[in-house]
Image 1 (cartoon, rainbow, N blue to C red):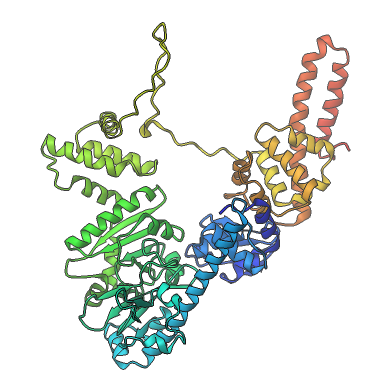
Image 2 (image 1 turned 180 degrees about the horizontal axis):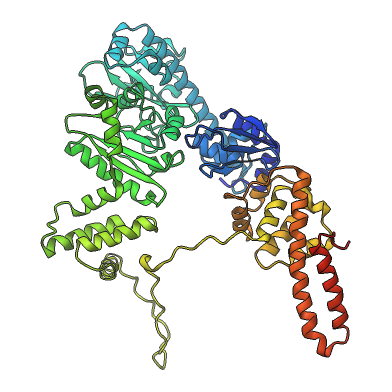
Length: 617
């Protein structure tokens, strides 16, 4: 879906970021801004600022910042389109799409309406299952026997599906409604066409998306029948390869704990929540996927996978490692926890206590260690053959890692284990990659009368040879841009000379100042949140984003003082410009009789500016 930038700008101009954020974070007025406890990391004193003038939020503690769309994406884990659509509904706007035909838009709208209808059907079933749980002493006793309180059962919306084959016929007046089968609640017999409930005599676990909408169910038998767990089938709403049980309920706890704890079952999640580990989620009867991990990383930079210590747990952990490697950059912590073979998280905590489980979490195996273990599995590092085998295994695990310090350190460690230096190891890996993916045969071309003597282009620098760029220090041009992007109405007080001075700054600053001036004359003063969206894809986007983020990005305060700050800044820039013009006049004096007079005039003006006199009109 391609949403026009003009619509994004209109949407951000209509919504109030203070109101949007205030629905999730208690805010108090503090000067020009509103302050609160950051929802993205645990803190005891407020460092989370929301600016009504810029329509932006910023945390001085963790550095998170953005507009109303970004807040929903970060806090609720929504995708960009979902966040835009959510805000648009709140202000009564319809989201347009540039790249679709009217017929496609109509079909998409119908699909969204159908998904909403399916969610309503599932929510109605969930309400009934909760009512049935209260009326079933046997199901209540089962949950109490697992150590669950009524509070936890209510928080996760647990319910009970009665043993009857057609219980839902008493919930939905039209039991033959196709929506019941499409939502996965009812099974339609292939041979006889008879309908019956999918979930019978099971404790029910509603599965919710990050917006809190019911999209499916998991059901557990009360006894030892098989299958022990039964999930909703794949539906237009539910895709088990991308959803995590308990994520909606665990969002705040994940941020407070600083990591998500990934388990393998519904009971693990609710039992751990009962014992204080409210940051637990579970995959839904499938191996952990890259999509699962990407969804978790919207909420936290830390993930701990908890697996049983048996062979099946090790296999599941190996699949999770493969899915996690591409996300393991230098700022994230991904770990693997292996419990004793006879335990899952639920049984371990009930047997050994919460503190013992917390110690196991703290001692979990970092991804780097597990990667080395996986690469060296069944490899005798005491022999050349075993080391060569490990080298081959390690290449496939190492290559998907994002470039950075972790990847480079692991390269050196792997090289040491296989007794090669890093250059030789990379040469071996390059040859292996070339054999695995040979280049396509060259297309025949016209014969050349003479062999070219030009050298082949140098190969790209290896990761070990690539240096990290250092951030450029903030300049006067940076600060001027920051003030004008934050308080666009200051442009009204600038003279023609001021504007010319700013637009003449070296690239890319000059182009940014020219763009700001053009936007002001075309649209008037706009908040930074709207300007940010207008810059999408613009050559100046990177510069504007840099000056408006980081430790020095906040320019709130008394408006008069900020205007004086800009004036002082412009005066210093004018002084530098006048000095350059004075030098040029002195250099031109031997051949230009008027140059000396021009020099004196420039010097007089510069000295006046340095004494604090206002610039010439």
